[in-house]
Amino acid sequence: MSVCFLRPDRTHGSRRRPWLAIGVLAGALLLHGAPSADAAITGLAPADPQPTAEQLKPGLSVKYHYGIFNTIEGMIMRTGGAKTASPGEPLPQLNYKVNFGAVLSSGRQDGVAAFIKGYIRFDKPGSYVFKVQSNDGIRLDIGGQMIFTDPEVHPDTFSEPLPVEISQAGWYPIEVIYFEKRNTSTLELYWKAPGQAGDFAFVPAAAFAHIPE
Ligand SMILES: [Ca+2]
Image 1 (cartoon, rainbow, N blue to C red):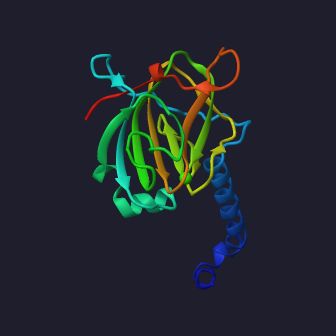
Image 2 (cartoon, protein in one colour):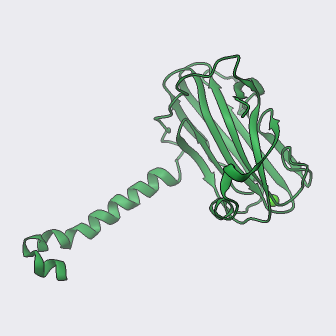
Image 3 (cartoon, protein in one colour):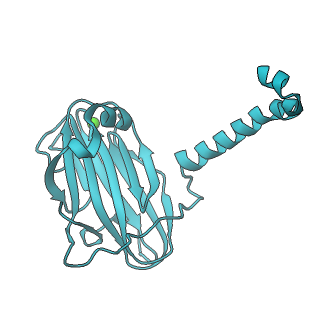
């Protein structure tokens, strides 16, 4: 109320603005939180400059932290994130559904957090639709856009189809932050590329690469 007394000319606006602010916030959450099956994600930026064939090695790079985590955010806060993680063997592609087996290339079955990085190649522009299966938490970014997150502990769960509009062919940065708490673990990335026959297929190993640090 003190604002109203000091600036009586703003009284009218101050009655309306909270609703405006709530509307804008709700809109932002909707846009950022859960891409629907209808709304393609746009604005993905290709790597600039594009990596050269000489720089690139197959698969995605991965770094690990070990511990029991409950959320992506909590895990990053507790560990310090990728900067302090230990490098592991690169991942040829994201097709891990290992039941009670070792998580990714860590050699451990539980209590693993992974920071996965590299490039994904879109051979032509157009509409690509991704699908993720995860257990436990995951966040996926491509070309600087968040494509999907399911940041807490959960059993094997498929995402909705995640349509993405690619405006030019080439290599795009990809980042996956993932953790496995206990029991079974799964990390799978599927796509349906433009003109791809049949159902969703794993993003092929040929579409992933990284620059070793
Ligand atoms: Ca699990």
